[in-house]
Amino acid sequence: MMSEMLSVKDLFPEGQIRFIAGPCAVESDQQIDTTAKFLSQSGVRILRGGAFKPRTSPESFQGLGEEGLKLIRRAADRNNMLVVTEVMDEENLELVGEYTDIFQIGSRNCQNFSLLRKVGKSEKPVLIKRGFGNTIEEFFQASRYISMGGNEQIIMVERGIRTFEDSTRFTLDVSAIPVLKEKVKYPIVVDPSHPAGKREYVPSLSYAAVGAGADGLMIEVHPEPEKALSDARQQIDFNTFAEIYRKALNIREAMN
Ligand code: PEP
Ligand code: MN
Image (cartoon, rainbow, N blue to C red; front, side, top):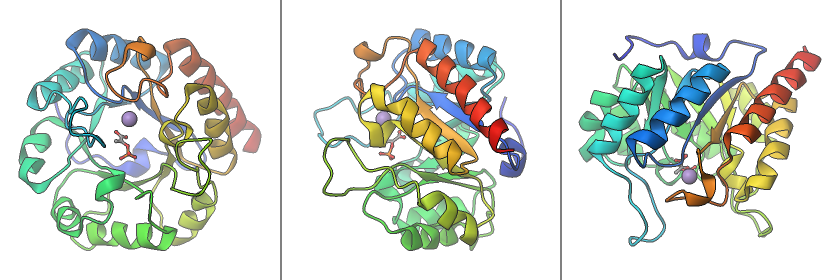
């Protein structure tokens, strides 16, 4: 069951912290369903998982395609969750739209202006991730390609940028949170997983984001992270997620 006319303001209420979580990629019914069940019981409402994966190497696992869309839709329905999954190109927009509640625009497509215009005409919310080579201003302008089509249901995600620093996979730009909050009224969400690159850094980046005023966290969670078919090194297990969840709520409450 796909929900009609979702409001991102309802999904990410002012002054609170909400979670989007799930594996990097949908791998099997068992993997996505186990994850959805755990997350749903924890209080997470939005399930993530890629079916079409933008991989650096064409030889790497590219995602299950339509089969992956079916699996994540089913897992979300069984566990009363919403789906967010990436649409990589205009060619698959209609197909992805048949299964997802929220379109994800990945970092590599942040300035794919024709794709942005297309989702700007859609009735579904759009979660857009900052291009890792984009300034905050460029990211803001990208969001305008969506809103100018009439779609104001936008979630903006800071996911780290390329810098000279190579101890982590990307550099989380915490400053993007207050700067974006001056420019837009959309929820600002932080993905700590991709900048961390290693699972042991994910908790710290999560807490920094909440402390800086993020409205949500988007975290990669896998039932057996070390066996994941993509981003195995950065995905966290259920116990670690439960700890981050609890502490993030505490930090948010302390701030209020
Ligand atoms: C993702 O979140 O699935 C992803 C591919 O991340 P990014 O586009 O930020 O690299
Ligand atoms: Mn990933």
